[in-house]
Length: 422
Ligand code: PMP
Image 1 (cartoon, protein in one colour):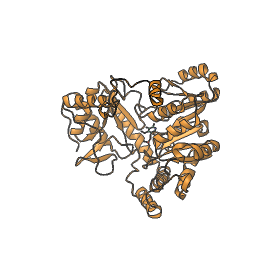
Image 2: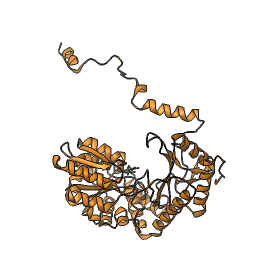
Image 3: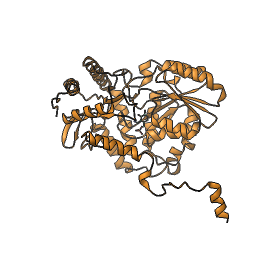
Image 4: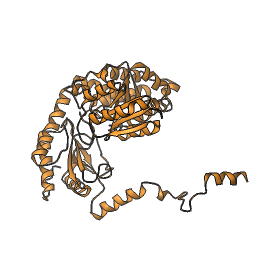
C-alpha cells in the first residue's frame, strides 16, 4: 500500500514513456536528420576525420597532406620538439597521470610552476589549473554564484559558461553580441535585485573572430559593483602585439579584470583550463570547487607542455606577428574576393559566411576535395542563414598557401572545380 501511494503521488508514467529505449533519447533524431540531409546531397560527413600526424598549418588526413584551417594550433607550438621534450621529461619523472585529486593525494612541482607562470602573465595574485577548459567554466561559475545572484554574458558566449550559469541557479541574462551599452542597461535594471553579479565576455570570439571593448566592460563592472570574468581561450597567444591576450590588445591593465579564465588546449598545446585571480578566489576554488576537488590533477606531461609553451610564446613574439599577418592577409584577400567575413578583426579567426547550411557544407566538401581542410559551421550551431566556413589561421601558414586557399574558395563559389593544393 505504501509503495502504491508513493507511485500515485509521483504520478503514473505517461503511456508513451520511452523507458529503456535509447533511440528516443533527446537530440538523437536531430542528428539523424542532419545525417540524412548530408546523404541526400551526396556530401560526406566532414566531422571526426582522423588526422594522422600533428595537426598544424598542414595535416595528413586520410593519407593526404592537406592545408589545414581547423586547428587551434595558432602558433605552431603543438609538435614543437622543445614542448614534446618537456612533456616526455615529465613522463619520465612522474609517469603520465597525476592519478588523483591534488587535494587528496598531493601535487607535482610542475603544477605550482605552471600556476606561478600564468599568475605572473596576468599580474594576478594566484592561479589554479583544472583538467579541462570546459570543466573550468562550469565548476567555477557553479561555485561562485547561487540562486540569488545575477550572471550577464554575451549572447555568443561559449557553452561552458552557459552550463556553469545553469548549474549555479543564478538569474541568467544574455546581452547582444559585444553590446556593452545593452549590458549596462541590464545591469542598471537588475543589479539591485540580486546579491552578487558576474559579467562574462570572451577575449576573442571563436565563431566571429572579433573582440569586445574590454575597457568599456571593465568600466561597467566597476560602476555596477559586478565581477568581470574574461574567457581568453582564443585570445592567449593570438591578441596583443606579443600575444598576451585581450588586455594587451585593448590597452587595459590586467587588474581591471577580476577573473581571467583560459585553456591550455589551444595556443599552449596541452589540455586543461586555468583561473588567474585574487588570492581569496583561488583559495576558495582550490578547497571547494567540485571540478578541482573531486577531479584528478592535471596530467604532469600536460602541465609541463603548457609551461614550456608559455615560455616559447614569451620568448618568440615573431610567432604572434606571423599569425596576425597571416590572419590580416587572409581577411583582406577574402574580402577582395567578395566574401562576407562578418565582424572578423582578422587576428586569428576569419569566418566566411555563406548563408545556407547546404551552401556551406557543399563549399567545404569542394575545398576538401582540393586538399583544404576547413570546418563548416551549420545550423543549429549558428542561426540558419549565417552558416559559415570558419578559418583558423596559424603562424605556420605561408602567403602562397593563403592565396591559393582564397582562390580555391572563389572558384568553388563560382561553380568551378578549385585547383588542388594537395
Ligand atoms: N571557452 C571557450 C571560449 C572555448 O572556445 C572553449 C573550447 N573551444 C572552451 C572554453 C573549453 O576549452 P577546452 O576545449 O580546453 O575544454
